[in-house]
Length: 108
Image (tube, one colour):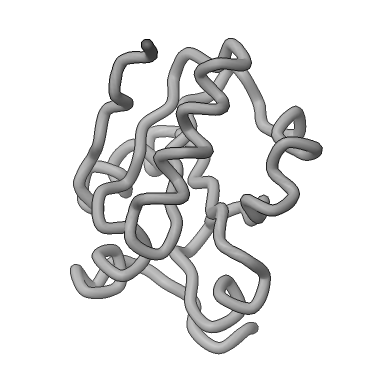
């Protein structure tokens, strides 16, 4: 059984991104277009198994979705593929926006 992935708060997630981690959003395109954390890279969960190799193995990955459930699944999948440095953003994009962290709304 895989150990649970580490959950980080939105503030901790932002700190890690500022230190070079990559924020990976696994929601669908329409959700991403509505609002997303600034700098997040979108790889929808529906395409994740075919596209996960686009993600670097030499950077920490902070996984984010709407509320934290899909990103946890994606993160556990990555760990199973040999990605070591993966954490899950607790509360997802909703918590990120609620905390007033940098986000992009309504497309660009």
